[in-house]
Length: 584
Image (tube, rainbow, N blue to C red; front, side, top):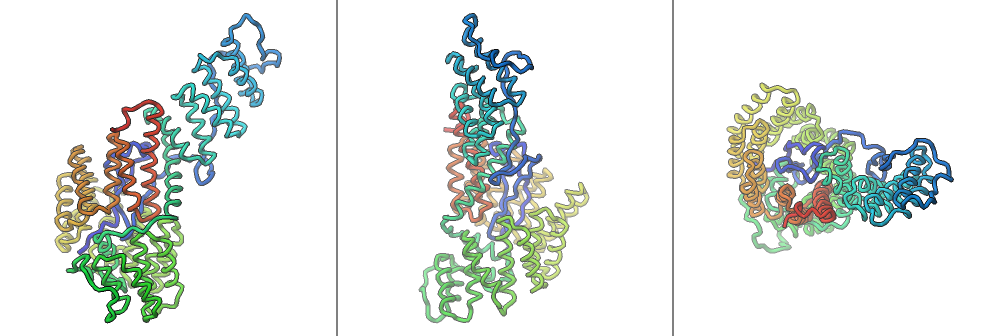
């Protein structure tokens, strides 16, 4: 049975929508190379400047606050200190501040700091707004002198006096960003976005940049200590369906097998590798890796096969460094069975793409093609890679090559149609779009149990605003493949886009968890909807449930970005006293 969705082209929101504003219908869907989700990142619309600690730095704003008219002529030293009793302390403070502004405009930041300091000392403590301006102006001087700690200190003083001072929040956020304190930066820029009602493009771009950097940072840290996650039986079967030429395990091995049936471990009548395969198809995943390791240690003559199955199991559990070790061992050895090496190269390519090493990714595909140019699996997975990296023309070529080698490879047929659809959209060809829709319907009659076809066609119909037909195809996919939790998520998202029916959508998506409580996509989607509803606490709880179920660094980075955005908005709302933003 053809089951899993490998490519799905729901675009994420443009940069003008922050992570807090992600519409539920724009949640990135499941994509993948069988085992993993490749989450496409949004492309920034503007160049956000140089890099520091891997995070683009926004240019400093050489601006100070001016509350009174002042001369552009540099003041003399004797004019700065006002000693006349005829002026009140506030008036004297304002005059000295004005002198500081002149020095600032001339680039004489040390003199400006001296003026602002004297103005701060003179200003009555009751004048909190004016005093906060003086601190912010002094912070601007520290900023220009690259005294980041001084900038943070004075911005903090300004904000203690005026918590909603956007200029001080923005300046401190940039200083935190330069210092690599991304969590603190995110809290400040989130406060700015809230105060600006998410209308300032530069603030949104900064928040988006920081979220991505923070998400990557958290994901990298999490991967170092991540516990293995046992995949769901549906996920495992779907993965092997995308490798019909796997030299060790075939998708057909899973047919008519009862999951988690009891059995005797260590059956001496079969090899350790055969025992590992039996445990795999029966859903007893915790026994697969030990059995493979025993096969390698005992030298049963099937070491490459055992290493490949163990690497695959590591992949399915999200243990990528261990998977890479085994795959490297296979690829660097003189394995007689070429199909084993090619399969290892395809799987290693997927790991390289997850770490954004595209050159290594396609180099592995080239090596695989040299070894076995007639392997359909190679062209399916490389075609997916091309489609994920927006190289539609080459993806079409690879899908066509795959189908020419295996005309009954239903997934390849349907993804080839989808690549042609993407091409027609890019060419604004309505006739081309209609032609592809008809091809989907035609080939559904040939492959009536190919879930992939129903899902991709439903997505196309959603794009074309044909919601009623899209819903029917999603339901057909669920009828064919009821164990696929992601189908219920996509149908729920359709209800939001089509009817704005949140209750029905939530019910459908929650039904996915009932089907597969290890589906991180379900929790992620529910969490994103809760963000839209203002229920930030519930959203964070749902994102936290999704995180341990994630299997790739890219997926983790995406989820951490969503969670960090919700946490930052919750903190900012508390700080600003905007309790209406926080769900109970």
